[in-house]
Amino acid sequence: MATTTFLAPAKLNLFLHITSKRADGYHCLQTIFQFIDYCDILSINKRSDSRLSSHYINTESFPPEQDLVLRAAHLLKQYSGTSQGADIEVEKKIPIGGGLGGGSSDAATTLLALNKIWQLDLSYVTLAKLGLKLGADIPVFVHGHAAWAEGIGELLTPINLDEPWYFVIEPGCSVSTAKIFNAKGLTRDKLSVTIDEFFADQCQNVCEKVVRYYYPQIGEALDWLSQYSPACLTGTGACLFARFDDLAQAKAVFAKMPTQWRGFVAQGKNISPALNPFK
Image 1 (cartoon, rainbow, N blue to C red):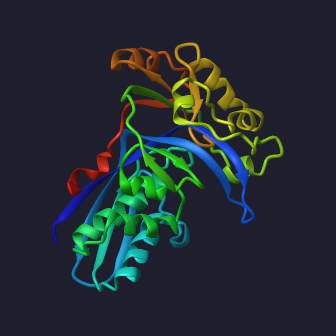
Image 2: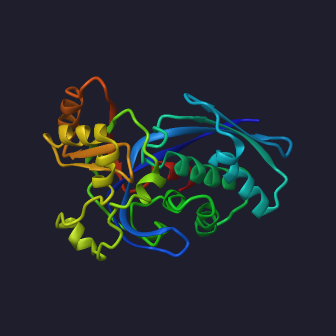
């Protein structure tokens, strides 16, 4: 069988406000998701039998219960009733646990790709609802458009933004999302804001203060990068970013990055690179 290749892009949270905590433990939030052209690569081979498998390059494989790619494939197979199978290889480039949505993006691309390969003809709305069962960030990757997000991140309003260049730093640590969301010092009662307030620079990431407290190395990276352009945490981190108007500016700052960190330069995208094969 022929192997088909698909992209799974990273995302940035351009700000993050938490407005309340629900009875079920989830937090209601406001954020803006924008994609960047820094992607994992999924290579999918349709099998002649019904078996599903996943294999990872550049990282260790996940246990089945933590493997969002395999879980997405099984969920789609169960929902559709298909007897088809697939082998899925994931070349990881997006840092794991960095707040860039790599696992959610891989799962969304799996749903989109298998929907095409298996000729299921399910709508994006249906695929997004399936993805939401696995993670709140998956719907934005399925729909593939930069979005103003509310609820737990699943209520999406498409938004058109500038597409600047971003310098993203990986500060060399992993942040526990649960630890941050359960921290006593986390602001959970921000008043709702509007898109106009975001464009007026009146929004921030409320997790940053807590993340700085527990992970001072992230605070150090934020302070260093802010010398060149206002730096922001994405999600709960650990990755952080700053925007630049052109590639040369971003690369110039990248060249000055202290050696204890890793990083990359990528361009913001309003339309997900994952959608190219499905247009």
